[in-house]
Amino acid sequence: MVSSRGGLVPRSASVKDVAAAAGVSLGTVSNVLNRPDRVSPETRERVLKAMADLGFVRNESARQLRAGTSRTLAYVMLDASNPFFTDVASGIDAAAETADLSLVLCNSRNSATRELSHLALLEQQRVQGILVTPVDPDSPALDEVARRGTPVVVVDRTRADQSFCSVAVDDVLGGRLAVEHLIDRGHTRVAYVGGPAHLGQVRDRHEGAREAWAAAGRPADALVAIETSELSVAEGREAGARLAGLPARRRPTAVFCANDLLALGLLQHAISSGVRVPGELAIVGYDDIDFAAAAAVPLTSVRQPRQLLGRTAAELVLDEAGNPDHTHRQVLFTPELVARASTLG
Image (cartoon, rainbow, N blue to C red):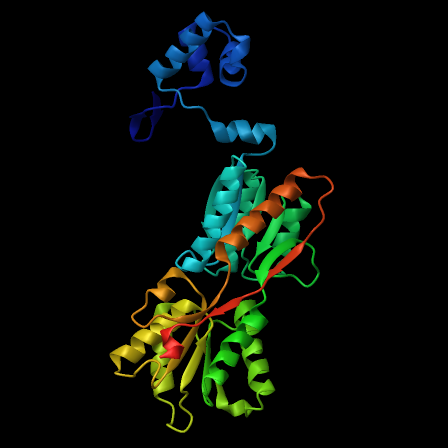
């Protein structure tokens, strides 16, 4: 027992305690933990019994820190409430398990300050590699982590200088696919509901939408853009209310949302307001999360290979950690439009 201001509290048994109880040296206890073949069966059993009697728990973190690295990968995701990122994490976890590694998940909540705090902690823990969907892919903090020796892979983002491995999807193409589909369905007034403008994906998907609109010869003012504070169902509902408040001549007959959560919120607002989908309002989302196909009106969406993104990113960071001849790669996947009832009727 050790004392504290509140009195006596249990203290975890140490290697020294085990050695004293078993009547052996500290080196013998260390051998039982790390090189059991060097210890006689009788002595090994005595040490193991002492560990069990004392409730000894090995401090794996301390051992890994002494060794200079851990058997751990880490993923700093942008928003743990978004199924897109949890699906990416699932892909990372599958690759980590194949490599006999554990995965630590961190949630920046779209906060650069939280992201920086997570990166600092993960460096201290000597993780083998960090995968990150950064708030800002050009953040100098990422360069500093890499400079100090921890491999970093950027997920669902790209960097112009290609100074890291990155895995992403061609979001400009995804935006084009979405709006081309709506144009093909005969829509002449379309809205783009995006998230925070500082997010690269939001800008890229909007750019693709504008490209498709211009290529079809449509007037620029017939493509309405609405920014939201976050990529959430609640913001999608709010966007629906804002669109409904537009004058009839400007009110869109179709909406492309920057992700499925926004689209699902917009769909909820439409249904609760008595708006027929797709008869009066067609809706396209982005990501093709599992909820898209299961919606009250199955949602047309631009599909991203979410788990493949994660697996590929993990393979890249493991290669960088273990291959002295590693070279950085930028992997860009092609999105796919999946048409469902929210646009097809």
